[in-house]
Length: 161
Length: 161
DNA sequence: TACGGGTTGGCAGATTATGCCATCAAGTGG
DNA sequence: CCACTTGATGGCATAATCTGCCAACCCGTA
Image (cartoon, rainbow over the protein chains, first blue to last red):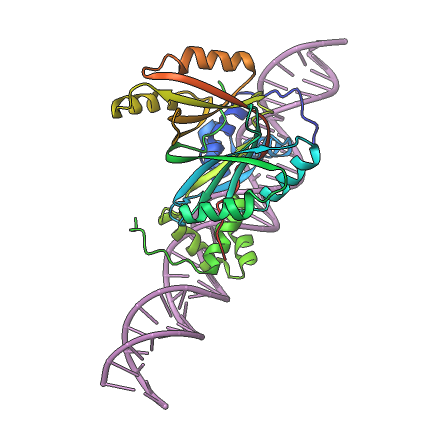
């Protein structure tokens, strides 16, 4: 473990970050070739980026539609009383629901959270909402928008220059 | 290339999908151990899942905050005229902005798109909005919510039993 | 010029991936 | 009940990759 340095990334590090955000399973050899370095220093840099916490991990992207999740929705939640306990409890309950892909606490006069959920269809949506989200203590309002088309998702973080 | 089958995933395939969504760079050997299969058939299954398109790819997760992106916002866009050309043009322009991490076309009486953006700070936000998003032809309204805290993101798609 | 810190490239051994083949289990028809 | 077919497994040999180590190099400084 290393304390986050003032963070000095040269162009090699940046190229590495760009490439592994696109091809997370690229071999170190090919990575080295593409950034114009030999395998040894390339691997050292990659490991250093991982150790520093800049690279949080690796994920395979799975096609949700092919798995039967044909409906994606953005669910906006408002809470009645804004106590830390209420929030903590809500977040814990929501984290336990696998259909909830993302949970963001956001600004907004009427809204406290936005959830991104994936379900099979409207039935699944209704079930999730009525049986698992609405009943959570403190939830006073729920409003959803459905995703008509995901234009793009899962883009990498820009690593300038 | 294979045509998407009726999709019959046994428990081995499901375990593979679960594991590589959590550890995208896991070695085939360890993957095989964890699912209780020898390396050969495990690798065959993994490759088959990739070929079938169920696995779309692999990504490294990069810590945006450490890269200086301290502000995340959800930007809601409304368009004045709902013609396919307007939409296509908007999507193209928005895709060219690296700060836009996600673009979803959504339902809503006043809203057509939700963008998830990452910027350095409020200055960056203002610049992005005024110089690159508002000027896009057809954009008639913009309303943003800021993310106070990302409770969780980037969760895997659930692969039931 | 000599020195020190940091990085590189190359090499050897360990680990992993890959293709091939015999074996095995399940289902079919004789 | 026995061939026979289909599809998947496990093991093995080979190829490719990773990993740790060390000498060489670059660069700023004394």
